[in-house]
Each structure stands twice: as structure tokens, then as C-alpha cells.
Image 1: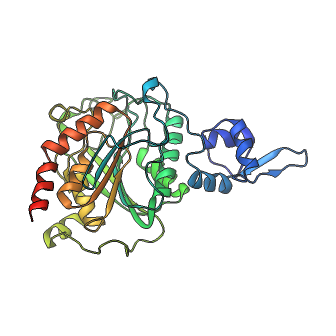
Image 2 (image 1 turned 135 degrees about the vertical axis):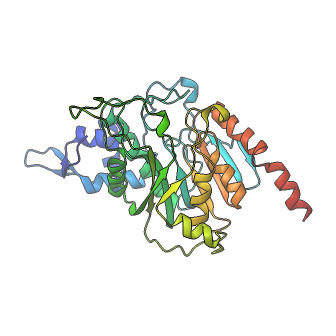
Length: 339
């Protein structure tokens, strides 16, 4: 729904993604502080609603539509997989409390793009309004989990042409700032997939051409302060890497979904660069939409602690097997034990 200064109870419920009765309960608990009109009707300020989103993400979160019943994960979840400093949780990120607040140094993730991808347990064909509402909720929860000097590398499309033109990057960045995140910069990822384009609009005509950029973006956000002072303060980035990666255009190929066995995998190179550029050795990295596990593989390769949350059990197993086979997690454990 459209942002404005004052909301009715029904509008506040829609904004928070809860029922009107839940709004009343939240008011009784002191989580919301409405004013009253001369006629005695409650009105909620946007500032109050934003504060509530940041502080009380787990109060009541609706399950994403078309989710099979066996994916309704309980709030407290045991790790699906745990080895050394790596954990995978088979859970709905919005419904689980498996991660403590202010414990995460860096978030690296690529959320669902809402372009009709056939995931096993997520509706990727929401209305754009519902998609942005879903985005607001999970961005708010991430905000509560990150440390005060934590960073966020958010891989999203620049825009969307399928099913109607939408400025996804601009809209999500705006929501992130409304939730509380501060904007730092944007990296353009040139994944070199121009050969795969199929839509031209009006061919050789100015009547209705489509402009399609063969790039994605990585939006860099932070919580309270940009300078990082927590953690080991040990960097592992080389001079050439630093020079190349602080250039805001990264060029490397995307990942093969056929090779990985996931509809939208991103290459390990993406989170690896983000970790080495924006975190210290030993920092804790979170991916709330783990998918095929690329972020956790990068954690192993760069000596970071990693937490991944994934709603689909099959993808949890895929991530686990990739960790074992590609990151050689058990071999690394043995090598460290023998040292």
C-alpha cells in the first residue's frame, strides 16, 4: 500500500501484514501508540508503524501464499546441518527465532525476484504490492539481527519487464531506508547474459521498444555507522582485489542452474567478493534466503562463520551437499585438527 503519514486501524494492519485484531492486541501491549480523532477513532503514525516493524517482526507473520502445510516451520528450529562454524536452518526466515538480535556482521543474500520462478515452496507470482509488503517485513527483521556496524549486500534486479515494468532496485532501496537501513552505494554486476534476451518490444520501431539491461545490482546498506570497529579487524583482501572490487562494476558470469540444480543460483564469486571487501576474517555472515548454498561455501573459503536460512528442505539438502563436495568442509575440518 501507499506510504502516508496517518493510518486507520485497517490500513495499519495492512501495513504491518497482520490482522486488525492483532493491531488491537499490539496496542494493549504498548507496541503501538495510536492517537484518537475527535470522533474517538484510532489513528496510527507511519513513524510508530516503522518502529513496530523493526522491533517486533515475530509478533505475527503470515505464511507466504501457496506454501504447502509441511513448510509451516515452528518458531524455534534446530539446525538442519551444522559443522564447525556453519549452520543451515530449514525454516521460514520471517517465522523463526533461531538467530539472536545484533549478532550478524554481514548479510549477503539474493531474495526471490517475483518473476514467476518455479520454486518448490514460495509463490514467485505475488502482486507487486504484496511483494513489496513481503520485502518490507524481511528487511525489517534483518535490521534487528545486524550489529550496529553491520553491513548488508543485497543482490536484486535493476528493474523488471516481465508482467509489467517495475523499478525494483529503486523501490526496494526506498523500503530499506524506510525500515532504518542507511544507503552506502550500489555495485553493478555485469553477468554477461545479453545472448539470452528474447524480448524486443517493437522491432526496429520507436512505437514500443523494450530496453533490457543485462545486469543485476548489489545494493550496499549499513545499520548505524559505516566504519566497522567490531570483529577481528583482520582483512584478507589483496591489493589488486581491493583496487578492482572498489570499482562499482563487477564483471563475471552467472551460475548455471542446470549444473547446480536450483532455479536461481548465484555464483560463489559474488558473496566471496562481498565478504572480503565488507567484513573481517571470522565475522558472522547471514543469508536469509540460502537457496543452493553459495553464501556458505564462500564463508568456508574465506574463513567466516556462516548462517543460512532456507524454507525448502530439498534446497537445504542441496546446500549441504555442495558444502561437503565443493567447499570440502570435512576435509577442512580434518586439516585444521591436524595443524
